[in-house]
Image (cartoon, rainbow, N blue to C red; front, side, top):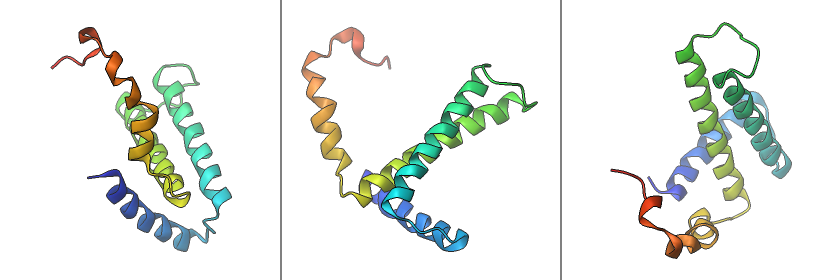
Length: 111
């Protein structure tokens, strides 16, 4: 699935969430929700790495929470980009992939 298609589908789900929970999806809400999700990801990471208090969760549950928070951050980021009409494919190309010419064989992922 392309980022734009994913963004379209997430937009619909976000509208359902807003309707169900009475949320006004303003610019501020979208950006602050992203910040909240990053905070939750940080908390899940700290728990996963053993640097938060033990809440008694099973290791599989801790890993699942970390994965879920990564998904939340990505989804919210895509919603913010959509709201502000940012083409992430283009921006990633411009910001990250301009370094492609510097890739050495040892930098590549192993098969």
